[in-house]
Length: 176
Image (cartoon, rainbow, N blue to C red; front, side, top):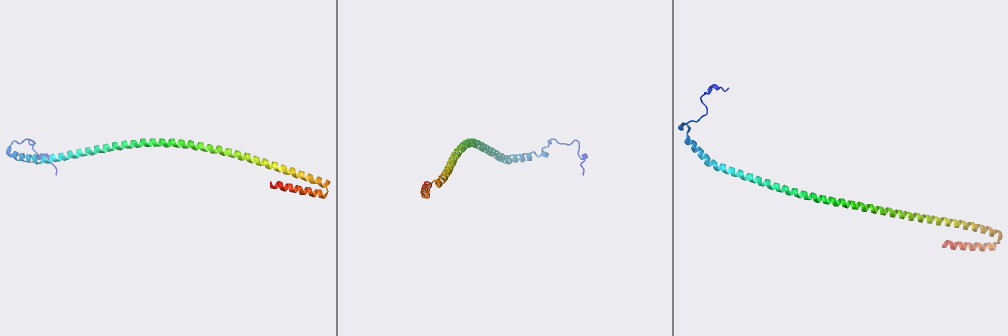
């Protein structure tokens, strides 16, 4: 099934046939006229439809472009608002931190003062307690010496009255 070139003659080829009957110009003219008449309307409507589709597509693209521009503008505005809000938050946090630090330092200072006052009060109480103990010991020693002196120098009636008097005095001191 091969194609051989021997079937074609060298003198034949594409050319113009000048024989009117062979070419059937009238038939061709009628067919071409019908095609132009019918096809022109179809072609015109196809081109019109295509033009409308292209215009609609361009309009849609333009609308989407404008919508995208609006969204970008809105996003930029939101970004600026977010930046302002972030700066406000940053400033508030700095102020809050400074206030917190000041409050903490004030509380520490108050605690130090309170501890110093407590220390001074404790020292005073311990001094008073030590003085009271010394007074009590001195009183006891004086009383013991007085009792020894009384035992050696006083009789039993005088000793009894002095002891009763001292007991009464000590009882009054203990009540106060």
